[in-house]
Amino acid sequence: MNISIPPVDENPSDSDVHFLDDRINEYNVERTGVTDGRVVSFFVRDDGGAIVAGLYGWTWGGCCEIRYLWVRDDYRNRGLGKALMNAAENEARSRGCRQIVLDTHSFQAPRFYQDLGFEIIGSHPEYPGGHSKHYLRKALSYR
Image (cartoon, rainbow, N blue to C red):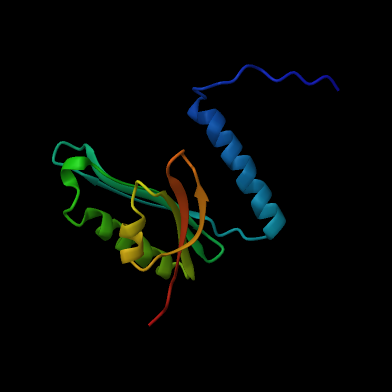
């Protein structure tokens, strides 16, 4: 077989990226038999419809993964991030999840997540240089 790798594509189409994501999800389901994956997303908009804060992730196999949490600068320190995380945690519980996982960089929000009950379970130093990437987990209890 003659393999020819094309030049790097620094601006792939959304459909190409979704294609890869779908293939990986199909493989994961095939290998695990766990078919309950569902998206979790919340978007807060201003009066003009612009997104000022949002959260995106998913639940799968008793776990919730938060992939993105963002609050626009002028809306920070108003409780939106905490409210979005609480909404995600409530949704995760309603879906029977036992934990929430996420990652953040040392210059982003590790303290914010730790204040919400997350613990750092691993880190990559020097990612990017001079900083670290942290992996966090919060076990969910059911009252």
